[in-house]
Length: 208
Image 1 (cartoon, rainbow, N blue to C red):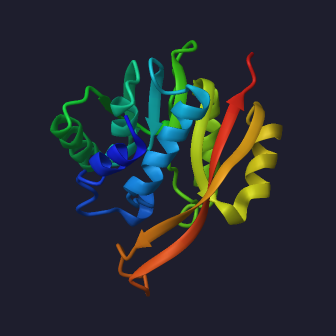
Image 2: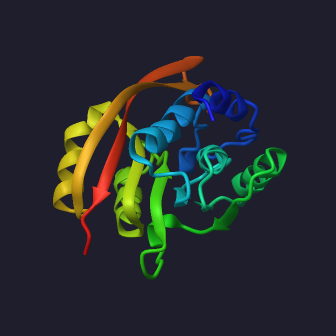
């Protein structure tokens, strides 16, 4: 599948109808989501025929993208049942098979090396300090091949240091810097849209 086609399909997905500020629910736009998954597959072969998990999947954008790129099996985890309902509808609309599970990914315990690749757009940690690092720590315990994740560019050094020192990463690489258009979803947002610089990371877990 070509990048433009993937972006177009993701652009038709339903997004949060009533986003929850405490969960830092922001939609992963089709521009970023398509490039994230396309890069993971075309540069590294981490999606097609692989078992892919989407942590904090929200409305399922990254999950759907993985399924469209012919992942062998896709599973999306989220704590919010309303988001999972929307994600299920999105998967049905595009006729892709994805399993969605309601749980707290930071407490997830999967036995054995079941998951090849974890993809995620975690909370940035602005409402709950350290939430982004909790997601990364959990993902590094589950993925056997790679973790793809979005983090604010301003946290780049902190992320790299923690991944290599604390989360058992063999490598931590920024693949590109992207502009994240944050729409005005919450009352405390002063501006209509905020443009945030985010890094697309690829982390490789150290084999135990």
